[in-house]
Image (cartoon, rainbow, N blue to C red; front, side, top):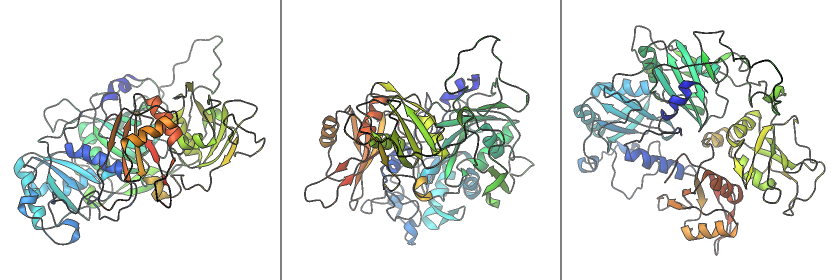
Length: 549
């Protein structure tokens, strides 16, 4: 691990989960985190109005809900004036430069924090007068950002917390911290260099995956970093996924000791891995490392994200280019030199507590599951055929080496290209050793729209539950844990829902990550039946973006 990786683990943004997380002062930010996790289906609300209770007095200024009706001044100022404005109703393609371009007419802007998955942002003006002009203007006429009407209100905070320690909001840094959200495709130094280098010369890149995927990118100058942050903050590397959340990092220089897929020093192109001393070396079962994508494994660059003229944020004499080219994900060499495969091999499974259904419950968080088969010749081992090789890569990244029912899982790419239902036998719990899940409705990546709603998260001690009946209670969920002999949660939170909502959602915190994984493995997709109900509710669980309640 490079020095920069160690030093930068506390430099995460709003969505990342590194070792130390800067505490956000924004109450509405935390509330929107909960709201986002509480949404299970499209409610039909207009952009920027999700989760708004129609019976509640409006807090948002602007011509709300496209009706042309203005909120009254009393409703507009339920929150006291602040230099920080909370912007809502942004389009999915908006980037930081779009907000600056649209709102700078109200006053100098000193900081922007994007919340891409919620289509929201926080904008800090240099003075309260600029924020007041912005909010007041929204009460009189529609304000458009990147071609879509946005809504404004004062933030509950007087200042956006910066990841850096600098008091000067304009100080900046030439090292940026990138948090990659919903990483459906592999993220390597080649990918990030292709994304960032057209905007400003990149010197070094370090990627770390301890909790989620984050990277630090060192540019040639502060001006280059500022341009890159403005042009890319909130953008998707690939359509509908791999969303960039960008902040300034704490380190002012990255220390790279080797050039590979996770770190690269472009000022030292011939920097290679240090060779071990000669002599006999211990044999590695799965090779030198779990994943190796070739330098040219992504093919030719393909333009996926055109930047409109409003996105060309000028911070130097050179403009941001009209088009940023991103590489297309293509077939690449896989683990241990094997041919790429959509089949994962999982060993270390508990003989009596694991079966095909429970493997599905856990692995379905990272991709569609086609088939699961236990190997008769190798006890405690199963083959999992997933939707594609990228799903296998995500499963390996997040599930390899986790503890489950007292055993440590080993997840790797199988040599098999498909799971064949041969030698079917009975497992210790009486279930079949083979099961086909291709037609199940519980697969979560069956369409592009469905897949884009899944936020890929590593295992955590907090589970997000949803799609439960409104009558469910904390005691009933605790009873469910006890009946299925899984650890009980220690904290419980249910999200507020609209009166018309037919399901409820919330968060469950366990004592440890291992306990949460075991509960999810057993209870995910459990059928909850209610008296006089025609159809059961399917309890759905996933790992939460929250680290604790």
